[in-house]
Amino acid sequence: MNLKVLVSAVKVGAKGTVEMAKIHSPKILLGLGIAGVTIGFVWAITNTAKKLDNVCEKHVKSIDHLKELYSTDDGEELTEGEKKELAQETIKEKAHFIFDIVKTYIGPVSITALGVASILMSHHILNARYLGACAALQSVTEAYAQYREKVINDQGIEKDLEYSSQPKTEVVVDENGDKYVKTMSSIDDVNTIVRVFSECTSDAWRTVPDYNYAFISGQLNAAKREGFRRGHLFLNDILKMLGLAESEAGCYLGWNIHMGDEIVVEYTDVSNLENLKDTVNKSNAWTLYFKGMRVLPPTLEKEDMLQPYRNAVEEYRRAMVEGGVLHGTE
Image (cartoon, rainbow, N blue to C red):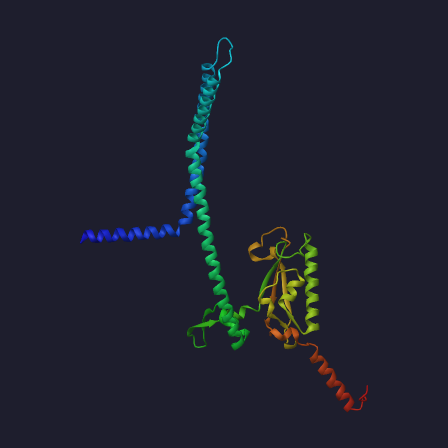
């Protein structure tokens, strides 16, 4: 019984080890590859310093020995047979020399090649996992986008924001002193967006602090005038005017002037923040708080926002005509 338990435990341990090795195979292969390449280079340098000179010296001595062996004291030329034998012996000696060179570096080259192969295999495994993760992410993203589209079509964009936001809990004490947990959706937080105007976030940023202050102030005033002219203003409209990157939320968040919204954008130097209050010099980066926004309908951009004013003017004109102040043709 104990033997069976031991065998079972060994099998389970071996299976777990194999699974862990598969999971961490890129790291293992990368480590083996780096170690192999390092050992190969060190081995090659060592063989070059210790063996290469001896191999070359041995080859030179062998060639000199052949020349002495086939040389004549009286200066007579070698016969055709002797020349042929000298050539054959020279070729053999060169072949031995090449073999000795290969034998000197075959170990380091093999280890280096295995190291490079391990690194490439690690890259191949990581690339395959990355492509698989991208495919899975793409599939999940498309499914989630379809789900949100159905929610928007069925319940509206405000419900979609409520469902997709993370709810918050707060302990509330009522009038009787009883405590209860109140769940609130973070949809209440979407009407305040924070952005940083700096060298890294806006092309309109300059190194002169006064210029940045004047630029932000001027662009916000222009944005307010544009909002009053159109009757509404999307968040992305202001972000574009400030040279900041547009956001997905900026496509449906903004201010509707006809519903009493006030375009409120507060901005302060980053050095004035609480965590940087001891900064001596101004950072020349500004934090902007876009407040008081609501979810605007997608068709709002296509509507004629001046039509309410035109209707009011027409009603006033009609009243003046009925009162006899104006004629119908005026």
